[in-house]
Image 1 (cartoon, rainbow, N blue to C red):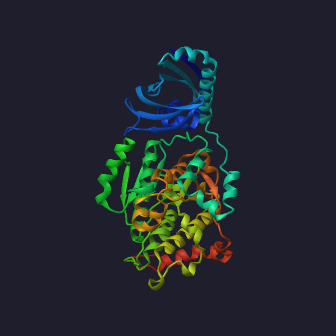
Image 2: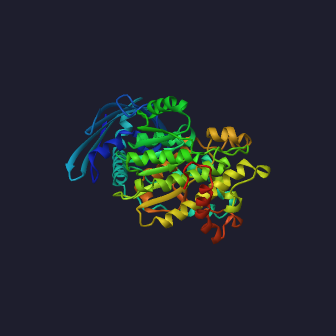
Image 3: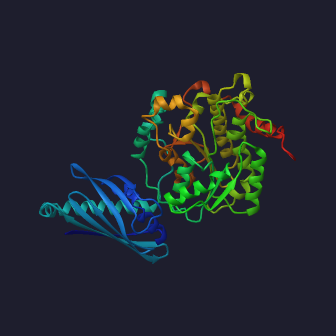
Length: 474
């Protein structure tokens, strides 16, 4: 057996370190030999949780199946890994040194098959160097001092041309972006997140990740019949259900008002508000309040809810965050308040959707300017081309053409989670993100709105809301 041992001290509470390390998927962020890391069992991290890793071993790659053998909060983590050529036992101990400092000792014990131990012993120096690099990577990850996010040179160049930008929307664009990501070790325990549209697709994927990160999660869904199945999914995959479930049809502004009233009455501060609820309506319809349903759900609803909940977002020790989920489709449209509401005779669902998302992107920028002194950062994101239930039902032709390059819901939702969780995501406001990078909001000059259109958006929203048939509207 060959044993490696390294010790580091980091300025992080022992609880944060323990939670980060025990989810062995994070090795992808700090161990340079790891190429892929996935959790292969459902539920919360515990004894018996399994992980599949693919690692570099010199000129070849090896697969390892890890299982947690011991998990003693917040002191010890023991994992055993099995591969074709060797087994490894990782023993990680954590010691609270006081004043927010944690000492971490990492021991890796290798047992080789097929008579390879003699060869491995000849490479001991290289193995020790590899182990040292891994633990130093862990120290950097736990430092959680990533710089303010900027677009890479490659991203900026791709955004200069439409084909290059569109290539970033695919799952290959996601993988390319992932290769540049900094670790995300920020702990969300005690952070209250409100997420709309959590029942499926991007919302459900984001909810699972936020629950795994320790957030206190309030989800908003429309249909009460979906509650039990949704909570069962969260419990099965993340190990626990959402903490609070609110019911509201967000295409109805009266429901938005009632939901906001309930949340304000509970007086539970909101650290992160994620405006994700949405749908693409191929057929024209007007809500019972007298407004075309795309504009109601995709634009008026997040505008009204966010402004009503602003008192719960203000006055945090660290900036609260608002995340507006938009769509790459908005790149095809220009903000024009006179044409945001499409009449029945010329209605096109995809265009109505894209126009509303363009307006929400501009609204994000306006809020960022207006709320600079309120310690509230607001950003938008688009998920690229993700294979969500909404795409499957509303855009079957598009899906048929692009299905070989579509992202998973989890890949599409990643930037939602990053904007909600990463410490450095609070350093920037008023930007559009894809794959954890700020992106251009226009791919064609023809979609750039004149200053007058931007200035007219908030008055248009207020006037349109005031004209709705809502009892007691004001």
